[in-house]
Length: 273
Image (cartoon, rainbow, N blue to C red):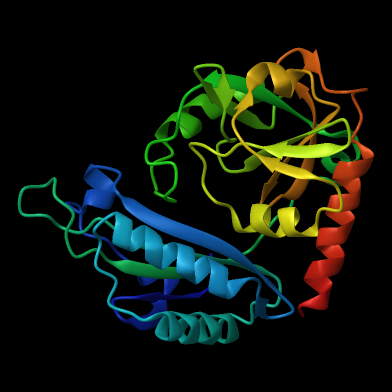
């Protein structure tokens, strides 16, 4: 974490940020967050991230006492205070201190500035492995703070040399624990339509695609038989997937459509700063 954050309605030293021990964010794991990058001091796709964060607050019944314009101003000032040329901004809204220790209450807003570490270069060059896991993330359309299963299961990923998981349920895949999932088959991109977070990087990748795109239910069998596969997220941008469980994807190397999209996204990003 960087030296300054926003909490209790003001800018304070990050080490002084506190939360009540009875906050639902702590005792029930109930809260929302969002995270985006800064490049050359500019918050990337800020409007999209603020819209999603505010929509998450509304859907989780958590009052957010700031307008989009006010949040944007807070974020820009925080970037300046922390001299955050390249890094990340994390917005967190806790569940609040509830009288019955269960119902959503007036939560506490935190905005933190962080360093950002991308995956190693070799992962983009060689691709990554995912482990399939039967699971649907609770209220998947909302970016909640509930990552308990993924955090617990991450020990297994490391043991098996995987980067992350691929959630599936009733034969259909949805997403990775922190990323959206795509396959390429016969020169066309397919990405799941159900039980997913509508990722901001996902949105931009789809807009940049130069081949046909299909947003629809996607089976695990289709994923295993794909010509290419990849995941997208704020912190990974686009990582090629070359193995799911013990199944090699395509020829086991990052595919041309995946790598072209990564190149297009990086150029698009540079055009915005």
